[in-house]
Amino acid sequence: MPLYEYRCKDCGAEFEALVGRTETDPVECEQCHSMKTERIASTFSCCGSSSNSDSGMVQAPLGC
Image 1: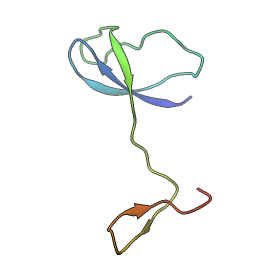
Image 2 (image 1 turned 90 degrees about the vertical axis):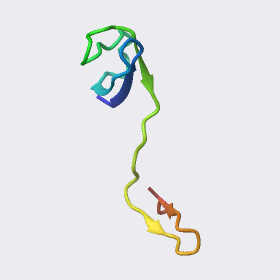
Image 3 (image 1 turned 180 degrees about the horizontal axis):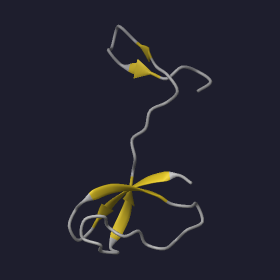
């Protein structure tokens, strides 16, 4: 089951929930128990990184 991030439309709380890929039921807010929630874009990290000293940017290695 993937871990998704959600935001409550009523209280604004952000939380994570394990949700099956085929589940379409709304997810309940952990704070106010509202069912008015939306899935938000998650940030994630790859399997490793290398630093580019010229720009200070971090790049994921090939084949990740």
